[in-house]
Image (cartoon, rainbow, N blue to C red; front, side):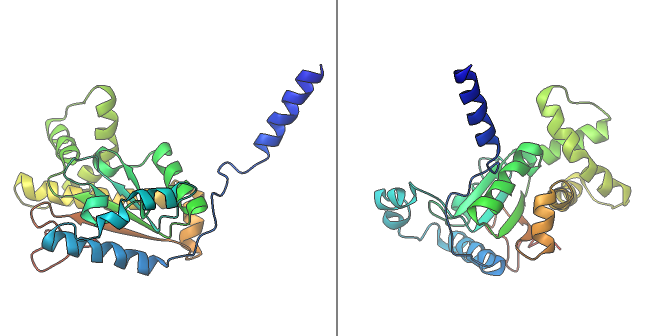
Length: 238
């Protein structure tokens, strides 16, 4: 009986704690400054590749510094595409950005929970929903919609999550070839996901409404290697 009582006490004590225990205290970086740090890093990458002192940013010393806690200033919700690695595209080292990656940069409960954790307990002030040119997941969703076919298996759940963006674009009656329409679908998918981050998470919605965090939408130009510039495929999406 005493053992059972002890186990019950421990269980109650555990559940009385916040779902995520705060790992550290962090100096806040404003959302605007966070975004600028990302764009500055991307400009370096697009122009001349990685230029940071890697001995400093990915060193044993840096690893040890981060061993007891992290304080990323931005969350990137990105696609799993092997050409779109946020740490490289934004020229960032260990501990700077908190990355959530899934095909089609969509969000479900697990992805949103990860973002909530980064914002509420790690101190991130910026969320970027990041799409990219020639996204295979969005292209597959477009093809399935046009064919009127259903994709089976777990991949099908990804297609279903992206289909609302395809439906929205096609309902506008936009003229163009497949590549042009898929581009529009990629942009629309980013917009819809950014909206879902707020609508599906009371925690993140409150953080946005109070001005604690900012959500931005962006797409990556695989050819140019950047998010802005005169010839950018798309820039930051309104």
